[in-house]
Structures are given as structure tokens and as C-alpha cells.
Amino acid sequence: MKSIRIAAAILALGTVPAFAENPEVGGAPMYETKNIVENAVNSADHTTLVAAVKAAGLVETLSGAGPFTVFAPTNAAFDKLPAGTVETLLKPENKDQLTKILTCHVVAANAMSDAIVKMIADDKGMHPVKTVGGCEFTAMMDGDKVQIKDGQGNVATVTIADVKQSNGVIHVIDTVLLPAS
Image (cartoon, rainbow, N blue to C red; front, side, top):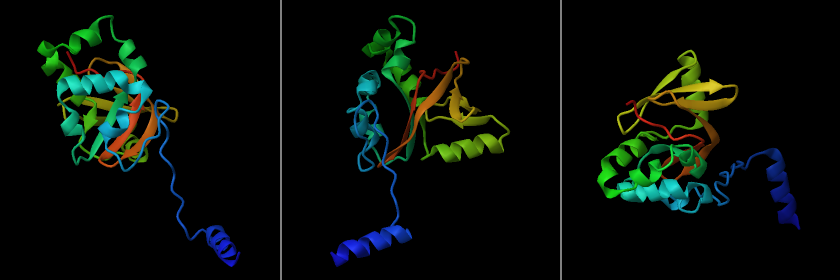
């Protein structure tokens, strides 16, 4: 009984740090101890992204040490593309184009949303984002939501931010980001 009172007193004093849990994504828990690929395969909302990552041969890369920030489009984001686009991109002969699109969703950093918001503010509302795929996008704010404008003028909104991974962070987005034509 005494140990319970001591534990309660320690908690009341705030000497034990509180750890925020990762949000669930696609109905699945996301574990900080797992890498981007290990977590993504469990998300019901990212089956198209996972299939694309496999088709592009990027599983090993995104399982690597990182750090990576991945702007992860949902299945619904892929569904917004013109009919037949995803099926065409998944064909072996289109691997280079698919790889380009996917790597334009990846930044070689561990960029949490508070850091992104600060960079946007420091750059007076628009922060350039350079991706590992060679794309340059623009991060901006819409109220309290982070948005990313792609090379074709499409705007993706971060719907779930700061999903911590062992090799970086995932920010779930509602639109597929495309390189400039």
C-alpha cells in the first residue's frame, strides 16, 4: 500500500515524464519502435501506398536508418487521381515514374509538425520543402493545419501529424503529391 501512495505522490509531483502515445493510423496502432514500413503495412488506410512502395523497390530504403519524414497519402488520396493512374504506375515498365512520385513524399530529416510550423512562420507563411526525389514543394498553413503544395499546384493537408517511427516520422496526407510536369 505504501508503494502505491509513493507512486501516486511521484506522479502528482510531475517528476515522471508523461509520454504521448502515437495516434492510430488506419485502425492500427503505430509503434515508435518499428520503422516506417513495419508500421505502414498495418494501416488499412495505406494499402495502396504499401503496394506502391513494394512495386518501386523502396521497402529496404524506407526500412533503413533514416531519418525520414514521410508524407503518407491515404488510399482515398490515391483514389483522387484520374482513373487508371495507380494501376498504370504499378506496372513494371513505369517503375522509374512511380519511384519519382514516391520519393517526392520523403524528406531526409525527422521533421515533427511543430518544427514545420516554425519554419513556415519563419519564412512568412511559405517554406520550401526539398524531397529526396528532387522535388521542391511548399509547406504552408491553413488555420492550424499544415499543407503541402506540390509541383503541379495540388494541395495536400496533413490529417494526422507526428506519427513517430524508429527511423523518422509519418504525416498522413489527403492528396498525392506530384512532381512538376
